[in-house]
Image 1 (cartoon, rainbow, N blue to C red):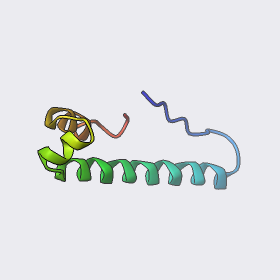
Image 2 (image 1 turned 45 degrees about the vertical axis):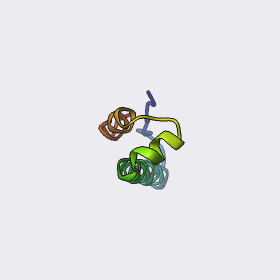
Image 3 (image 1 turned 30 degrees about the vertical axis):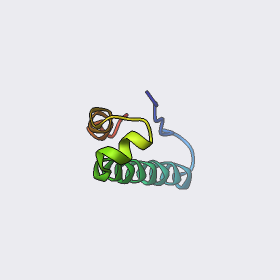
Length: 64
């Protein structure tokens, strides 16, 4: 599990950059999970995972 730590002190610009970076990472993870769900069973087998694995990954929350 990845722990995202946001600084509580420091310049507001640094805190804003940290928040924006977290948002960008979260959006990218969401996009990748959606793409994973769109793959066919054959394509999933090609990359070595099952449909169950893809569903499990796609259902993970934002904090994971």
